[in-house]
Length: 404
Ligand SMILES: O=P(O)(O)O[C@H]1O[C@H](CO)[C@@H](O)[C@H]1O
Ligand SMILES: [Mn+2]
Ligand SMILES: [Mn+2]
Image (cartoon, rainbow, N blue to C red; front, side, top):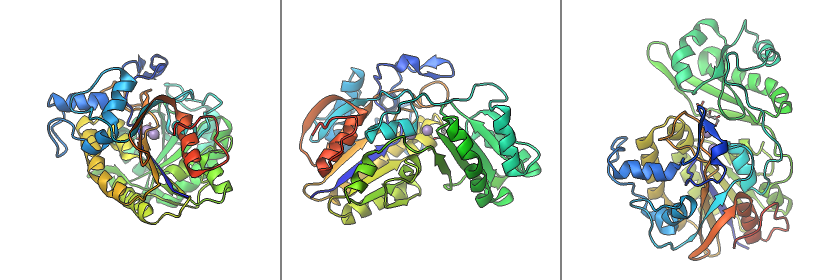
């Protein structure tokens, strides 16, 4: 038996989604969005010399696996600085689920395309129907809520943080994703109280097919400003059927979740989970590389590409984080054993050069280590789950087919 490691670099899309014209950011279609391609272009032309980095995008290790080749395959054009001859398995995957959000991407990667349309809140003020607002007020025990609109999670803290401290009312907002997010101060409102509020309203939202209620705790003061902490917690609708994690666990394998994987899969089909900053998660991943059991699945999500840089439209920060990951990669690969399979992919795009602050519909890279140099061409998201299942010798394969 051998082991499998599935690593999602959250939002690291490579352009070329055939249905990008039906997804939008502030009313502008996602046609042409290309997270990695546009970052590489910005770096090559000197427009990303900040965040402690400068010059062309340097991703020698990911590129050696086939990142540049995958990008060219997905979007039809090469990008300066990438495009080494691949030494790994490489290809591009296309999503069929109707959402460009994290659960849709992950469930489909794990073999289960989303069979429904999610509920999104309108870009109006108020954004939430009265019965949702009333339920929030009742559960919070406050005189009202703040926000009640579409917003960027950091911008809304600058706008409403002080009022939150003064009134004690939670800040509730949404985005182009199927989410209801609740921001509250960890100390003045209370972290546990915030979690309890989210938990109380989540069943109602899930029934409406809203994918997630997300607790967004923060610290700080009106004078010093407010900063979100890493204590974010997602209360996600459970996948509507078994996924790769369940197939593995049902076959008696151990399943290790790293990062927000546990929340995305509603804590189903896994033996353990760990949260933290991407740097901590990288160490956890290396720890599993050194110590995970034979036959096990380790499924990781590194979210900072998306949360700290993509949504913030921070090109230099995104480039620096890619370069950081690339520099860590050899240590992780060195922790793996003969016979292991490691796959690096993404769940959607979040082009930091694009309009708006939401995800972008894109194809994603599929890079494999441990199975030799091989181009697999264009595949489906669900083929990732099927391939990992095939590698692990699991009986279930889900909606995809193995490319191994
Ligand atoms: O602006 P923030 O709060 O980071 O929100 C982002 O994070 C949410 C969940 O990942 C997305 O729906 C997106 O809107
Ligand atoms: Mn995501
Ligand atoms: Mn996101």
